Length: 284
Image (cartoon, rainbow, N blue to C red; front, side):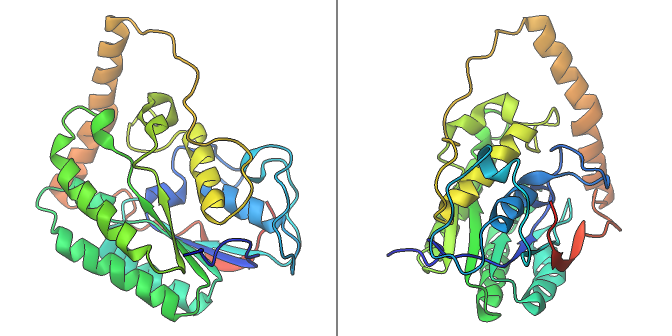
């Protein structure tokens, strides 16, 4: 069935989720916030003329890079790093539903999966209720995501694969609704490349955010600016000593603090407000 997103011109966009959607580890903007793939999508959509029946061809680079935002387009980003899907459902969904954005992106659940003892049935329930509430509020299109496959790049992540595959199947089932567009990151081997990830190995690099933005625009029926699935040029081989030094730095700077937060029940997003809490004109 043809997705309702194809050739639809959106005048409002609300982004929901955790650090993935907040944009962590992308370029830092003048206001101190990360840019992120959602901002890149907003910039591209903001250039589309109101009332157009076909989206314009991409210009001046992928995902809207280099374009000037047009009048009338509004954008909010309620995502906050560290949020679990239950928190996204309770804190972000009611606000987003009241905003009545035409386009909504919803990503969540991976923070739950990373925690021992994750109840995947509860994660699916909260994710499904969130998507239903957004559609009931009048959203024209809800974009959802499958996770990348961590087992192809992170040692010790094989235990996560059954749960990630179950979530993938659940999201794909939700995508049978023509109002829900699913971005399949799991099946894109380009995300096995460490260069698409920050040194913390959990958050996307600027190139990773650029590719996710293009994937979202493709799911919305926009003409391709580049092949976001294409592999990067081969990287020069790394010496064993360099790999060891990188692993030790990661253990001390990233994995250790992450484990510490889990043991104490803290989150990196505790007390942090969304970077765009209101649905306001976008002037990127």
